[in-house]
Length: 516
Image 1 (cartoon, one colour):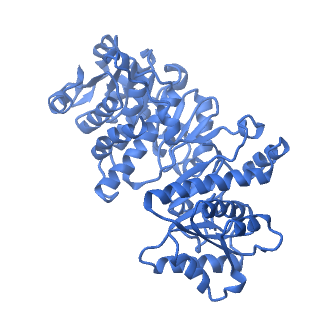
Image 2 (cartoon, rainbow, N blue to C red; image 1 turned 180 degrees about the vertical axis):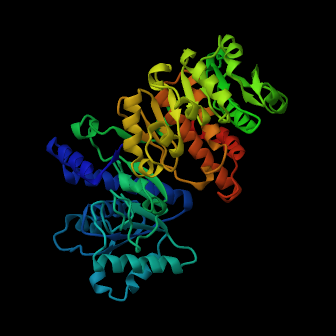
């Protein structure tokens, strides 16, 4: 799914129209796709009644096409028209011929008809306003939305709300939202995800997010120029390594994980276990020697390289033990839980230029990396760097506020400058490639705001790199699975507050099974 501004979407539609796909055809395709999704949801829940709030713009047109399709499929339908004149409107004529009913807001000053329509429906289509609105809302639209919001709030079992392209009242560029905006259970976006939907507060109003195609040729210049995508299950599913009956452990590589210290023992366990959970054939754990007794019983599947230490932190001389252990490794992770001691920094500075393997560098590994002059020129090509905003600040010299205010632009800028893949963690994690491509993970949840979840992510990515995925694909797949596991863990526990990194780890198998 591509991620677009409102102006980019207009340019795409304009080019498509100029190349023979008319606006009317695009609307028919959009409305039909919308109706088919609603119909499937209806079959699953035994729903057959739908009301639509229909505005004068394209989203209102999409809603009318969908209501017409649903009426012909046997649904009881109501269209509540706002500033849309029935006379000489071909879409309304088609809808009426299918047996649908229309009501006009200008004849419903008390909103009793709106109340009746909503109360008698299983599904409410929000097609009032489009993607190009600017705040504040005009009076009539604000009144209709506020009335609908109030009606829904008063219902014990409100209808399932489906937003057409975007919830009415959302600025689809900035993510700002009117107070009157009706929260959707599902937003069905047309052809592309609008940028504002993946910004707060809009993201909290969209519910689940689905996309329908509108028939656009994929070779349109206005589409091929767009370099940012939104990860979804279909994208990630095709990236995962094939697992055939003839496979053996060597098929799926060896992840070499340098992690842990006496202060952060669990980081090593989380990263190593995640590498196994994502399907790696063998994981070798390189940890300070005192950690072995604490960890080995919790990860019996691993092999171990026990490193010399200073008070439980990897010592400067540890490279002499580590380098001879790399013969079978197919990917290398360094960083989780290393700590910030000088002896470990010197070890990292010494070892990293010598590693000729696909690299993932995380956490304290990034902090130590920043002390190496021109580090990005000295490490193995196409490394994956997984900073949170604080670590990105250390690497770039920019403030955390500046990074957070311009996350995508900064991730792309430094991925290009450094020549490595940047996974900028946080709400809507950004994966940026040196070639200018980027992918957004459409998840923002406090379930992942917990110590150790970053170690799990690093383990997932190195496990995928060990299995042969390139740096960018491994980062997309790892970050998407990680985010979905966070959501699943919160759903299982019934709260985001209680989610631990181990819960995210335990949710990974179910997420993967749904992708296979």
